[in-house]
Length: 339
Image 1: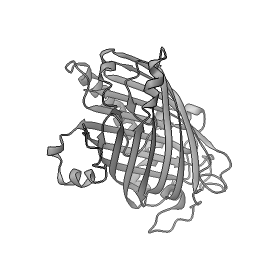
Image 2 (image 1 turned 90 degrees about the horizontal axis):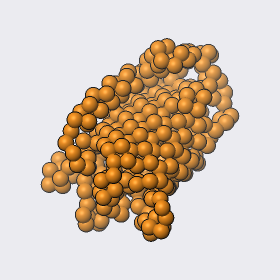
Image 3 (image 1 turned 120 degrees about the vertical axis):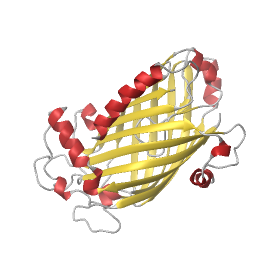
Image 4 (image 1 turned 135 degrees about the vertical axis):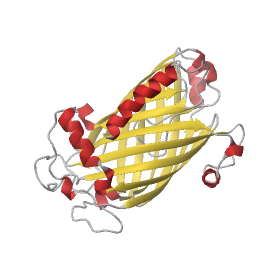
């Protein structure tokens, strides 16, 4: 189960990172968990788990695939540009609210699971971060979403076992391309200079094209706190997006402690979502139809000690499909370890 893998990898990398050499970390291991049990619910987007590795890569060492992806990260801002390569494994699961019925009732989300591999190239400097990702995955039984949920509900959370997984979105191999751009809000540094606290933030926009999800979005994130290290990071699972330090903030890393709170928002224009609209190449009786406009806001707190970062957040999301009875909320935990 991916949740168990995340826990084991966290322990191993924690030991490795603790024993590594001094100095600012250049590579990161990222562990993320989204779950609505953090908000006392068990429905809709009910769980997401992700483990990823992000490491720097010199431009002259880019492979053919990475060179092709470089074309989408924007070469215009090449001054003092740094490249990083990300590899991630992600599992997502979706369920209705009623766990006892054999099929999702009207007005409730259908069952769906997805398991995918992300390969991403990131180009960043002190002003902006451009990311481009190739994501390959699968829906249906091959996603192992049912097995993962049953294991957690039986052995960890002691929650009800959902009975309708036979109706989940059927198998389809998914391929997607994801572009994301985050732009540092440099004027906040000027504000921060006159305050006893640090203020950081960024605006972002991006799009995804593929049979898993096709959409476009725009949003922002603002943080305030003590000795903020300056990062481009969204605090919940976002395919193709990881932790990246803002260039020029290395002096803040000399102090091993950071504490901050943050607030962000995002608006999505959705054309296709396989977990709601169903597969492109197969029929599905339980498709409900995605809403074209979805908004969310997120807030939370983050702490850092030396090479380790921990973020707790809560996301509130508007209705995502037709006839949905209420909006959704879920919590997230994100752990980063540098080495």
